[in-house]
Length: 394
Image (cartoon, rainbow, N blue to C red; front, top):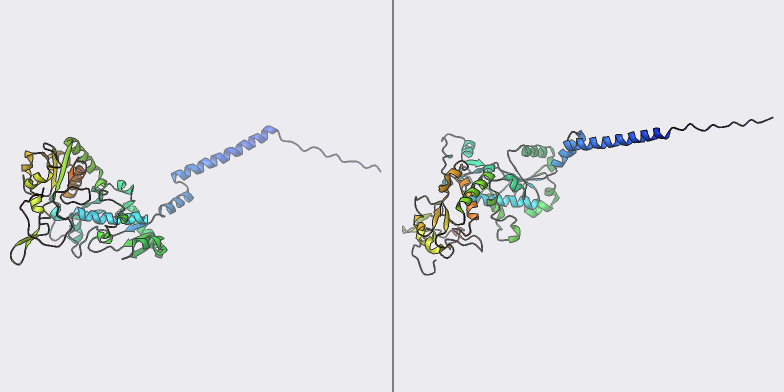
């Protein structure tokens, strides 16, 4: 019996051009999907990407010190001057910098009535505490450039939407959301996981003033921000005004003469006047200023004077040696910009920082030159004022 062999036919082959078409189409689809994914991710249109972005934005940690920089004891309707409050603010910013946290800055700063004459403190006697606070304070971003500060220490205001989101999130997180601390060292806040992993640290600062938390100012390694930091962070409108005035002044020197708030006297039990700064009244009078600054400021120089002395023409005797200039000479520049004396002093401070020679009232740093040798720090020793000049006083 013959066995018939079955011949297997060759499989049908697709044309090579068809395979190339399919392959090209597949690659094109992959590329399009990749581009679409990148586009949506960049523009935040993907739900999953948006969720990741939200989680990332909330991975930041925050530090809160309270809504008022300076609240001395039970007298929270009053406050200290700008310099005192800046010491407190710098203390809190340093801690945020040390902990690598975003600092929640109060949206307003209290203005001490003795440091303001612009009339914003005239308010009804029956006004509420909050109304009086609003009337005797100014917006923080009218004083400082927050974006500029954030280049060194990230900050947000306590009236911002971001702050309200942080508060809402911290409440949802429970024990991982917020830690209320008092009397805890910076090192513990940074190193102990019970604090370092918390979203929001709410520090209960000293009821006297924030800078009480930074008493160790003699420890150089503990100082992260110099005194000049906040003065150089003035709001843009104030910096522009200062630059215009500096341009008009040209080559100039400057002195800061602090008198009004420092010339405090009281009588002892024998009726004799005593003061905490025995030489200050003498040292800041024009006849002694003449003598004191002659070795630093040559005859005929332009001398910019910033002072809280309220007697008109008090420094006019200096005009026999110098070309005197005051901020009041530039009212056309300042009046549209300055709303209170804090803003005015911030402009004056920028001008003084740009002087060829700057003479302070008190010596604050090793390289400073000053009008008086009396210490700025309150020694709490009441002494009889000295008005006579002796050899070597100048």
